[in-house]
Amino acid sequence: MPDPTTIALGVSALVLLVLVLALRNQRKRNRRIRRRFRDMEGEEQRMFSFLHDLGLAIENEPSPAVLSRIIVDGIDKVVNARGGAVYFLGQGNTFLLPSYISEDCPPLIGIPVEVRKKAERDPRALESHIRLSRVAVDEGILGYCLAVGEPIHVEDVKSHPSFRDAFTRYTDDVAALLSPLRHAGKDLGVLVVARKHQDGGFSSNDFAVFRSAAEQSSFAIGNARIHREAHEKRAMEGELQNAREVQRILLPQEDPVVSGFRISGTNLPARIISGDYYDYIQLGERRFGIAIADVSGKGVPAGLLMAMCRSSLRSVAPGKLSPSEVLAAVNRQLFPDIREDMFISMAYAVLDEANGSLTIARAGHDPALWFRKETGKVELLRSPGLALGVDGGAVFERVTKDQTIELLPGDCVLLYTDGVREAVDANEEEFGMERMSEVFRLAAPLGAEVVLSRMQEELRQFTGEGPQMDDITLVAIEKKR
Image (cartoon, rainbow, N blue to C red):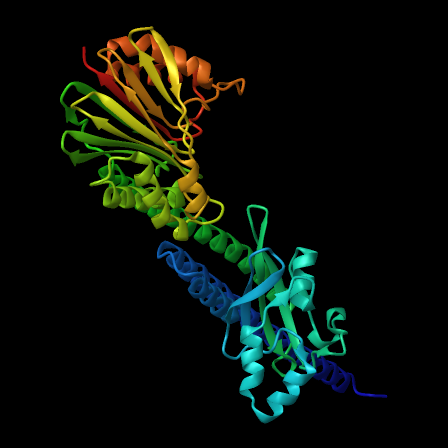
């Protein structure tokens, strides 16, 4: 029979052994926990560093490529990836274009067979293909991620269903984390990081961290775009204001002093840049040129064409007393440079101080209004003419004719652009020729300045709070009593 003491010692030794083994296992578990804690702490620190760098980058308003680099390189460090890339949607949202691909990033797109064969001779061919290729939004894992609309974890890229095309194969052993980039409900592109299988796969924790980082990246990219667009808009508005100031200088700075007459003009642009213009030209021998014009369209193109028209008119008007000849010369100069979808309507008149006559020609412009003091009525000056830029010369010169009238004391002529009669009220009703003629008839006896102020006031009352739809230009010519 075994000695009780021996049995007790054996049990004690066994218990001690169990305790030692348990202690060793606990120490191993503690080391694993501490290591995991350090890993999590390091990952957390890397995440904080990434967010800090991202915040600083946004403040400096970086270019899309720079911001993409900061995002990809930062997330690579956070999840210990081999590399990554950002692809943005191109114009039309039919292709994804690489914004940044990190240097060591494994291929993320399928490689055509011919490119792989070429790369066997020249490795640069593969890199060039990857960095320059645009990817259709319905191709590869990038297109798949965009279509799914949420982050995905692809453990083996080459086995993914999106790479079943025999002509565009994927052969590398790569795992990838992908996320669509969205901001304010709008797709921006795709963010992806990758590892080669030899580096180990991504864990569920890596995927969770990547998802969070991708959300922050989407927010950063979206806000950067908003800031950049706002900056570009401010810059453009500044440039347009400068252009408007230059254009304003090209318009008459004051009404001319003409013996026996009062002349008053104004230009009210619908936008910053006006396609209307008017001008006064001293011709000598007591003769004075008066022009008004309306370029088709609005904005910068119309404003540039207006400036060309003014320059041309001033170069050809001196020495010519026939308005139709002047318009013909302007048309010959401008026609080669006017786009097919643009034209200029213009009226040009020569006022003779000596005999009080006004000779006018119209290049497709609205007929001038003539208030005759003698009858108290308004007549239309309908000299025939073709718009500038419609014909190269022969037809224009055959059609465009002069019309001469004699202005008596109290008479008044109004030149205007179609923005006056085509102004609309809240019910889409036009101001119209009849209403304009009546306002002119009542205001003309009070003088040129009153004609302009009354016409503008009537237009304001008619249109109400609605926006001005077209440029408005008025020039009134009054024969003093």
